[in-house]
Length: 160
Length: 167
Image (cartoon, rainbow over all chains, first blue to last red; front, side, top):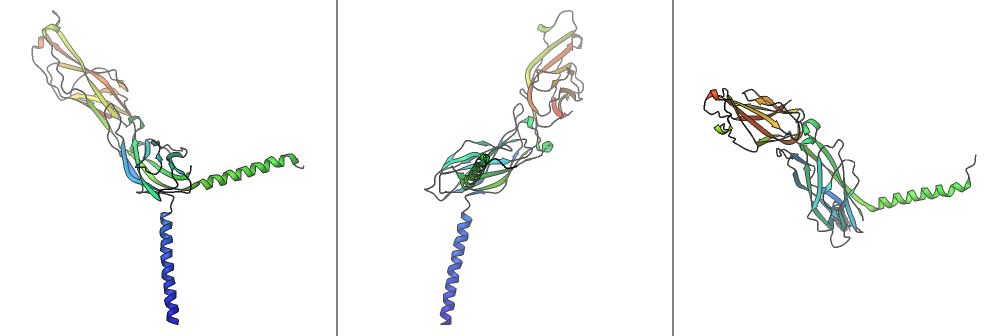
């Protein structure tokens, strides 16, 4: 009898553990929007005499977002006090929703549409590539004199 | 003093509208995430000419009888630059230590900065353009060769170097 109870408890514990794992897994996937790839650096190192420095691009980060109960959209904004140089971002490979044209990231900007018309059905989550483009003019100077631009770029998903 | 009763309703209504508006905004946002993106710009200094080789020839057709000094000019080449550092200028020099004839050079119509006075080339760097800091631009290069009839015939070959340097 005691053995049977212990076996039953073990079974419940196992079931409970599985449930906890499933819930944890669900929770980890439940972030509505998730920037992947970590922090990024873009370095401008060359240019053209009589022209301008050559812009550089970076596609090493991505944005994963989940379907929501309503049609939704993702906005982007940045905070970069003392910004000197130019940075824009564009979503690539968007199959759930419509990518906006490249957004110029300017310190103090308002939230700006990044991906719109994200449907509320037909998918669970999807990932798009973040294409960052950094540019500068000769007149804007260099990091040795003005320091680097460090942007905190925030993506927000909200009902459209 | 008692507050007039007729003002109470607008105040309550305003509070209600603010609360409703706040709830509405919060309800619409599902979540957000961020990362940091750093932009660095190296110190870039570029200078180039559009023509590799220029010949100036003093021939009989350009000589005035009875005059010892003969000259010829060329303004076919262009100097292009770009620098994102402040306080810069362009200097010019030749590698030819003892030229037989004089060769002068001047910057013409610079798109930024200020042209220095026309200079006779020597192995010592001499100002060519001033105040070009943090700009890109171009100017025509005017070379003027001078020879005296009494110096006879011959040729000089110069390798001319333009340099962006601190002002």
